[in-house]
Image (cartoon, rainbow, N blue to C red; front, side, top):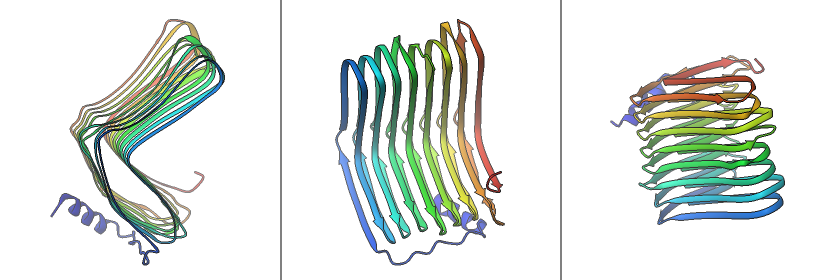
Length: 408
């Protein structure tokens, strides 16, 4: 008997309060078979002396499937990737009077499905061989910009679903590819009034929401490539403040159900390095705060339910190193204040119930971590600053369960 079968049998026996979802004969039935070899790339490059606004969006996907369905629906099949995927947004200007917004998104295998007035039955396999899925959002300012937002996200295998009825989801995601997301601002001699820089990288990713009916999620996620998220902001005068954040996860799954019992089971395994790096270099930020965060996790599973019972029983194994670093270097100009946070976790699993009636959480957790877990926060201020706040948290295995009444 396979490890996955043993976990699911154990989970089913433990979750006595969780009833199995029932599904009618589907109105919609989709069979998917996608195989991508070779490279896929997108690039948007803009350069200006002076401009009011700059807006840039780049998207690159190896395999992409999108469904917007009405009524009970069934989707099954596979997506296979053997090649690199790259998305780049490259912006440069002397002066920007109003705003800059740029987004770079790279995904190897991607499926998005939404169902109205019905339930979703999904059975999907996503596989990616050795390669790289990377996203870069870069802004260069030489003199002035009012407001800037730079974001980059990468995922080797990505699934996002929603259904107004229940869901019965079986997902198998396997990746040997590296996932890299980098967002950066290069403005060492410039003034930017407000700046936001964010990078999110994942090996395998699932986000699912359901309503009103019982739902079941069965996971099999495996990541062996490196996962890296980098957010970097270098600004001479970050006048009213700068925010930089990076998040990296080998495997991540979020399952939310409103007013229907929820059951999550299966396995997550990560053996690749997971690294989240945030760097802020600001000579001054006299009228605002410099805020930086870095969050890295090998395996993450969250089940959240409103007004119904919840079961969480994912077997998690992490053997890759997990690293979260956040660094702030402030110059002689000084600043109003700084807030830094670095968090690194090998395995994280959470089950949450918002209870308006007598419902509860059931869990059967098996977490094994052998990777080195490191979190580091560093602040250096050569000028005057009013407040400095920072924290660093490293945890091998973390399991969290909570029930509470809405509003508490």
